Length: 449
Image 1 (spheres, rainbow, N blue to C red):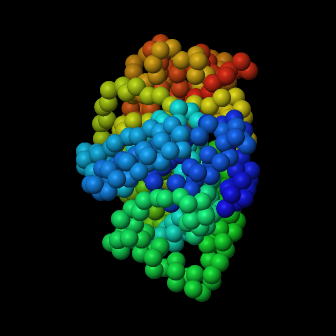
Image 2: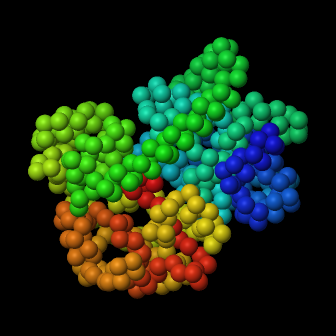
Image 3: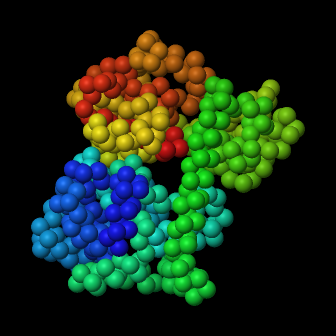
């Protein structure tokens, strides 16, 4: 298993020498093996290893048992540990989300907070990837859903990406590692557990190397998905005509690319994109006109060669919220995270994401605290790329952003002025230069990142 982890670190450019890494430590077999293995590699790769445990307070005494177990393990191994206690059930109820979705969002927010700009290592295995693939296939997913667990996602890495759960458990036995069992993993009430306990064993009885073969297939599919998304990004830029899409450009695209362009357009506006909407757009493109309701109060219209979403959004009002490196706090404007990286880390990001510079801020040029808020009268941004400054109102007028959409555009500012805006990038005052040593990278889900 150690060799597979080293292969993953090399293949996916995880943990360059001298890195600081925070292990998401539940106390289960996977995360225990991951922490033990990274501690063993610490000297060889000059790693600083620490751990973070999030107690979701969902399983009563068992949750407290897991926390106590993790505390003792980290004391014995002399690993710095950060613990967060989060009442996930109450939090989910307050924001109207499922416990699973809210818990996942909070978990990554806390992990990135504990990492303080370093890497976060989660213990997702090849077996987890196979289970997720089967679950998403049952939901009728496309390539994006099949390849739902990437090896690297921003500052989050998955060193056990190539290892099966059986290999992890064997590693624990060989190294005498104790771990705790989550009783909820044995309940057949959860679909994932049924896939793990019933479907995967049945497939393994037909093909004993099911997970390894699944891993090879996922590798090929992930490459295909990456290529298609890159092509869709180029096609989106070519079809974009100021808040709408050119129908002629759309009609010339392969259906696989056209679907991704439409999905990007709709998700940027917080609107759903399903098979029925895509079929309706195909029919409108053939007819040269038409409209379809995509949700209450919102229509997708094709007229005079332009396709656009039309509707009135409910009024949104929010107070400015302080933000920093890590997951953005819950707000009505956007979801995403701010990544704080050094020069070497930023260079590595540029190799994987060619447009990352447009999303970067010189962290040391931020004046005081950083805030996320709505637009305000008089907001002004100077574009370093264009060498000109204008009020946000004029920038948006030129981009033909509908007035009723503007209150939903997130604006990042410090205690002096506007710092960064989606579509416009960083203000010239804080744009990175050759002298920049710390970069703050803005990654928003609404931008399809």
